[in-house]
Image (cartoon, rainbow, N blue to C red):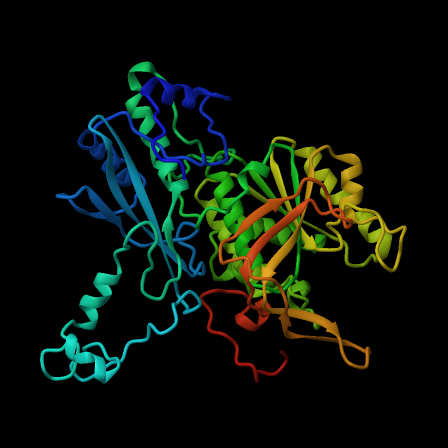
Length: 487
């Protein structure tokens, strides 16, 4: 982090008009945004930004600090499972210059993010428990803490310093992306006299009447935006059957369309499902819409390999939510399961290629198993094999292939049984390497022997069961008991 970067209003206006009119560079700068205004003059514009972005807040007016209410990822999705709030702190750089520190606080419906040892010991007086030998320093003489559970929860809701945490969350960090987002939202007001627009533009879908000024997309994925270019193709070679990859895709799409890049997602699902998925994405997402989507035989395969997981169904719901808000998101499917070997790779390639060439102004995010996405010729069992990635690379100028990287965990995997006679599908261990909890994209200086140009990292992985086990993929439906007949 570089502090003390002096940006005058003239320089800020220059930043605003660089490149295409009304558009910002996708990648967030790695330095602080400095406002060429005293803190007291800048702060009313901060309040106005959060009001216009529909982020309700409470404010400590005496100290120029505000905290937003919780907002769910993907614009109100029923199944996102993650909420975020912001602590916004006004700071005086000099008497005439100011800046913001914005702390993102994340909360999950489950305890995955919880710090160990944070369980509460509920007593009859609703005080906090602990080691009885250590309680006297906190107690009122009766051996219990003097602070109530409710007061302690409120105290822990406020971060301390640049990095902090919320109860049951392991994520609470300074968010430079949000700081620049607010800066770019405020800039048009500061530069109004010069008639310059520095507002961050969203990718609004054709025909959409409006698109939100702000959408919660989760913590910024490091390295993603600099890879996104109009007409570009990013191939993601995944391990099927995790919760994390579909969330990575949904977050990636959300973070790109909200900074002006229209995105098309390609999914390795049978082409026979194209009409159903298109209809679902254009629907209201009601009970009948879910049932129509899940009627396809694909979701009911006797050997569900992870592509039909609950997480994938939920991802489609999240992409539907973005489209419903007026954001420019498209989805296509490209698998040809009736074919095999080289003929299948050629069919996959032609389907993807036709989509890319038909919409050269869009960024294409294509997800597949990690054999199809390789851009190098040959496999260990067939040196002449030409994967889809290799064939696409021959015909397109901008193809980037990323292999999946992850921390160890579990995945829903179909593999041959011990006798090698049939597929055994279920939750199985997945061995990886710990590189932290935050999603990121990392590219190398050159491709490796498999033709991958880098990795996309999704942290610890957890298995996602077939959507059919979760009430036809409907997030409102109660899970089907495991003992139910026919499953």
